[in-house]
Image 1 (spheres, helix red, strand yellow):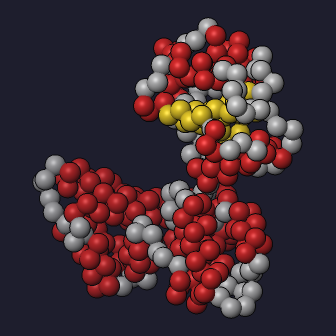
Image 2 (spheres, one colour):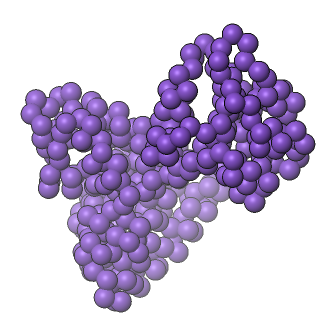
Image 3 (tube, helix red, strand yellow):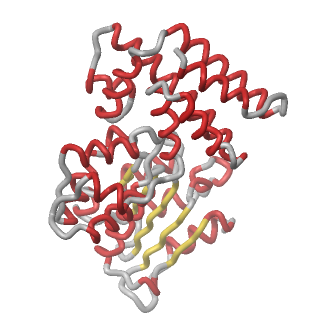
Length: 325
C-alpha cells in the first residue's frame, strides 16, 4: 500500500491469498490513474481468452481517453510456460506512455521470465494471507480509521475469537469491526461490545469444544460435540480442529521444556501471544503420552469415518478420554 503511493508504474502484478489488500491496492492504483470505470478494460483469464487477445488489449492505443488501462484477473495461466507469448515480454519492457496494465493472480511462479520482467520494469505487490499472530498492526490501523480504541479484555476476547483460525479473512474482520463501531457511542470498544455485535464465524464455535476438554468438563464437551455433528458436513472440520488442538498442546510442552514460556510461545507455535500463553498453560494438565496416543487415534478415527467403518462414537470416546486425564 505504501508502494502505490509512490510514482505510478505502467505494469503491476498483484499476487497473494489476502484479497483484502489486493483489492485495496487495485482500487488505489486505478484511483491514481483517474480512469473512468466505464473505460477500464477488464479481462478474466478464467473465461479462457487467447493470449493474443490479452496482448492486443494491453498494447492498444487509447481512442477517446488519454489512458488505456487493462486489468487482467486470475492471470496465473499467463505465467505458465504453455501460454508463452513472444510479444508480451517486449510490450511490457517498452509500454506506451499512455498504457497501463494490472495483472492479478493468487499465485505465480517467480522463476518465470515474465515475473522477472514485471519485477524489473514495474512493481510486484504481494499480499500473503495473514495469521492470527500477525493481526495487531492491521487492527491498530483499522481502529485508528474508525476513531476507536480497544484495550485489555476486549483485545484478549478479539484474539480468542480469531486466534485459532488457520487463516483470517481481513474482509470479514473489516466488515465486522465496521458493524461493531456503529453500535458503540463512545470511542472505546469493549469485550461486551464485541460479544453483542460481532458475528462468530462457524469455525470459532468449535473452540467451545476444546475449552470444555481443557476444563475436563466431559458432559459439556460431549454435548457440544454432538451438537456440532448434527451436520455431517462438519465432521472433517471437527476432526481437524481436535487434531490441531492436540498437536498445539504437544508442541507447547516441547517448547516449554526448552524454556520458552508464556507469551513467548507465540512465535514457535505460530499463534497470537494471548492464545499461545493459554495453550501453554493448558498443556501442563496433559500427559505427553496421552496426547501422543490420542493424536494417532484421531488419525485412525478420520480414516474409519471417511470409509464408513465407524460413527461419531469414536470421537466421543476420544473426547471423554481427554477429559478424564
